[in-house]
Image (cartoon, rainbow, N blue to C red; front, side, top):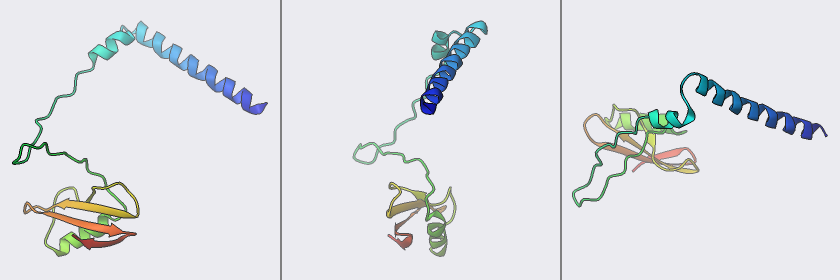
Length: 119
């Protein structure tokens, strides 16, 4: 019984919030249709290609559990700079990290259960 009361209360609150948002937007001269049109389209970045014309995929920087360990390993190999060691693979028991060095080289390491080795 208590769960049904909570569920009904949540449904009422959600519908009230969406109604308030629609009314607020309309009163301030921003109908929902115009809001979608007002957002600028994202600029298309020039896509990089390799020597064979194959597109190069950009991976967003993601820190991982062993990022600090890989950064220390890279420092011992005279690799410094950039954002640090970023996770290339999905988080899990085996992870691969990559770090861009300030001398133009890449340092990569493979970590298995937080035990890292340079690649």
